[in-house]
Length: 168
Image 1: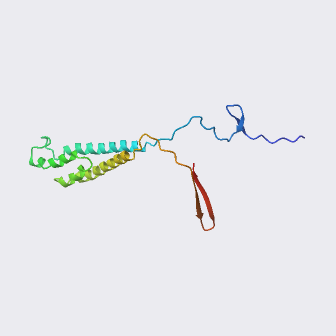
Image 2 (image 1 turned 180 degrees about the vertical axis):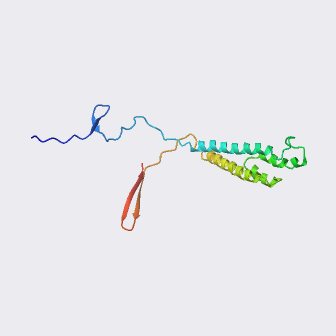
Image 3 (image 1 turned 180 degrees about the horizontal axis):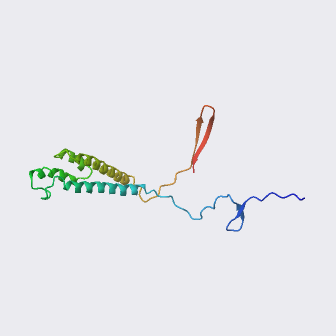
């Protein structure tokens, strides 16, 4: 009987009709693709403005009803007039909730918990907004960095090695 031959290695045909290995990397792109621009600063700016705005407007609206007797912002009764400074400082973003702690006429209610929560929300939104604005890299893409090569020695109980690390 005649010996059989071994099966051929897997191959694929490229778009040009030549044979290539099935495990070959894809061809390099023909167009130059610019560096990817990081938009983290934009996301932080928009999210920070939204969080700050929601916290500020929510506190302002909730504070307008504090101690209100139905006569408007200034109130009719002496009890309602005690809350006027509290309502007035709700116009101030970020610091308003913390100032409201100092002018709160009656702390035996839910206002201290609300003010602490809202103050933290506004502070977080403000921090995100400022960080997003400060880290704006502009429209210019970053210049590519030069290739680097470094040697990193590693030691262990039963080994010693020298690693070559690089960026290209």
